[in-house]
Image 1 (cartoon, helix red, strand yellow):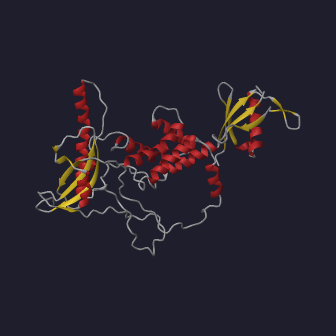
Image 2 (tube, rainbow, N blue to C red):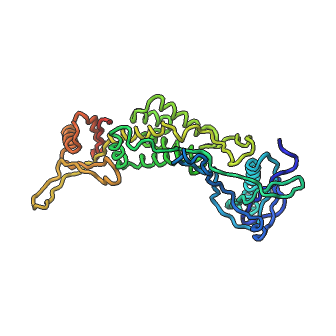
Image 3 (tube, rainbow, N blue to C red):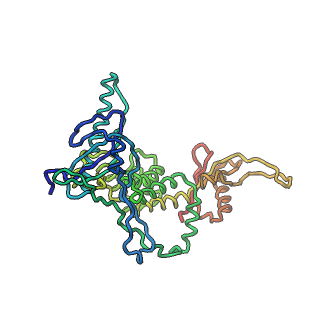
Length: 399
C-alpha cells in the first residue's frame, strides 16, 4: 500500500549540453556543488558480493552481482525524485523509471530545440546521461536519512565442482582436439554467440542481448547452409544437410517466432508489459524469450554443423608443374593433393591434375584422397565437379 506522502528520495547526477533547472514531471533538477555532494557522500549505486553463510559446505562455487553501474558522472547538476514505496529497492526502481523517462524526452526535445534555433531539418541526438548516487528515506516531516539498501549476490552456481576429473566418454578428448583445431569461421562465430548467451546472466548482459546472441548461434549456421530467401525455407534445407530432428526443427521455429514476433527482442512490442510490474530493482525487462542458458538445441546445432562440415572438403583444381627436389631430382605435382591455408580454413585442398575426363578425374581424386586421409573409398559419398571445372566438392560419411 503506497503512502500519500513520499517516503524515499533518490538523487541522480545528470549531465548534458543544456540542463534546465526546475520541476519536471515529478522530478526536480537543480545545481549542487561538489562540496555538498561530498558532504552527502554521493557515490554510484553498486552491488557487492555477499558472504557465503555455509563456508564449510560451499568450498567452490560461482556467483554474480545483480547490478553494476558501468559509467561514472561528475556533474554539478542533480535530478531528485521523491517517491512513496514499500522498501528501498522498490523506491529505486520506481525512481529510475521516472528519471529514465524524463531523460528520454529531454534528449528528444534537445533535438527539437536545436532544429528551431538553427533552422535545420535534422540534428543529432545528444543523450542526457544520469547516474543514481544517493538514496534517502524520508520521515513524515521530510527529513532525510540514509536508506538501508542492500544489493548483494545471492545465488550459488556450480557448488563444490568439479564432480569428475575425466571425460565420461573415452573418445571425448580426441573430439575436443578435433573441434578445437577445426578452422571454420561459421562455427567460430556460432560458438562465440552461444557461449556469450550462456554466460550473459552472470556478466549482466541485457535480456535482449542474451536472447539475440542465443538465436544468432543458430541463425548464422542455418543461413550458411542455404541461399533461400526466407529463414523457414533455409531451415528446411539446413535440416536435411546436418540431420536435424523434427523436434529440433520445431523448437527452432518456436525460437524464431519468440525472437521475431513477440516482446522486445528483434522487433518492437506495441506495449511494454514490464511497465505493469510493481516497482523493483534491477529494472525488469520486457523480453519474453524462454530459451538460452541451459538450452540444448543451439549446442546440438553447433555439434551437428561441425560433423557435417568435417565431412565436407573443398578441392580446387590446378594444372600440375614440375620442380627440383633437394636431391636434385625432377618431380611432378600431377595427381597430388595438398592443403591450402590449413591454419585458417580446414578441409580446403588443392589437386594438381592434367586429367580432363570427368569420370577418370573423379576416380583419381577418390584414390588420392583415400590414400592421404587413410579412409576407404567406400566412405567417400560424393565427388561433385562444380560448374566451370575448377572446383570439386567431396563429401565423406559423417562420423
